[in-house]
Length: 192
Image 1 (cartoon, helix red, strand yellow):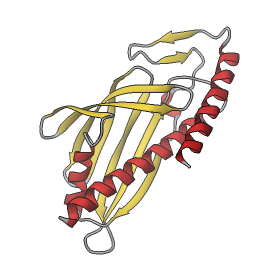
Image 2 (cartoon, one colour):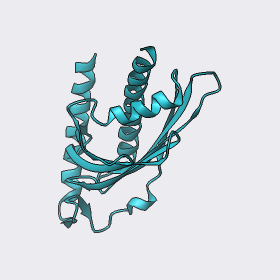
Image 3 (cartoon, helix red, strand yellow):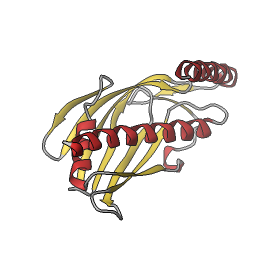
Image 4 (cartoon, helix red, strand yellow):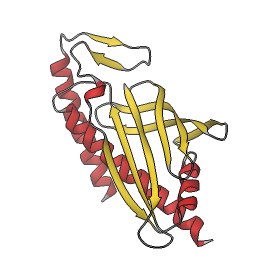
């Protein structure tokens, strides 16, 4: 099943790549200081809507908070570069960004309100123009549960027909995967 989904994703990415090539002919491209490509007529990143996903995790707020922090280096794609007790700097490789392909992004996670909110914001990227959002935690309605809302605003840095729809779909998929990973970490820690 996963192979079929990956094959379909690859076919979709190739189709969109062909569309990009066709529409980009003659369009001026510039490289910004972040290295991300953008069109002269690009829609400003500020106009992008924030996407969000919410999950209820069967673990207390403190355990979920620590699971988010543990997620910073939970697999080979993420590397924790530094952490001063409040701000973490993370370098992450996004391997399957539609049309763009692989993208590398260094961002900060700032613990704004202990046990309540962690925000993140891009420092630099070889592809993205915008990468920001936040985790918001609050006690769930049942004892020892936590409601986690993860928001994100991501601009892939390239323009093609329906790019906003593709970015929205990709961002929502990534939000769900991130929350599932954090839930798994928190549940495992809570069971100990």
